Image: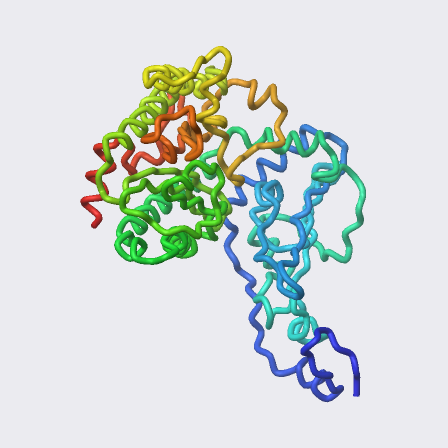
Length: 441
């Protein structure tokens, strides 16, 4: 009898049981799997990448499982560049583009039931533990790629995240989205719209819970799992002064009907493209005069920013347009907000948008000259999200303004002559917000 244990709770496997486990299984192989729609696009992307690095071996890993606690892993999410080039999502696999331009996907295929113990004993990769993986032929059919066993992979060549030039170029390739990507992003935005509507309908219950923020987080998370893979990032559910914390993800506070709620959330599709939308709305259903004053200034700033979006405009133009409106508005309230010296930034803190795609802050490894200091082109997808964050302890503010945080964030795709508001199904103006709240409750 063997005494081998593969996990702390495993019992020994007798030779008789090991032999018994290899027989009596139906053949469940799929010989006619249709190619995934994304494969037509990943093929073109790989060809473009190979042309940029002719005669070189390029290695793009999917990434590995990461431990959350003891023997429990986080749910796996493939590296964005790997997903972009393959459409595949399994851990520990590797895409290699050979010097000839030929692409090979090295993967851990489904383990045969007729040999070995992996399929029922391996807690990380075993089919009985984590589900079925495709075999080599199934993967080749799905992804339109030559496949090989991961055991045959040999390191060497330019490797993603180790080679700065390769990593940067892959980020820059993703700046302009193809039609498949834009469709994925629109699906993400549409699902996010449903999630925001779910939240508004659930507000009566959330208001009655001591952790109302977390109630809202759960409602949106449910929609994300029903419509896609998950949330694209940790949802920001910020009531009252919590909205002055840019990345408030503790989400452990109550909801006060006298406060605003800032909800920054996005659904990630099964293809791993994420939306990124923010709405700030009054939990009472109606803005107070001071809340409306702050909200309407942010709305005016967002409109000014959106108006700059068109091919050939500098990426930074929309932020500067929004900030000029913010600075002028703050000055009109009697605050120190000079634009040239940047004093207004005490109350607004951060940039007004970013590229969007497989990552919520997409293309982050692109060179400044092609992204932050570059110009907009048709097919780029970005967020526009000005905000005001009036800290509760800021003595430069009159008491009635302290503790109010407002952000309005929308997703837009650059078109031939301007930009299309992908998240236009959600209301933006204060009057529209109030009508929306009333209609859903």
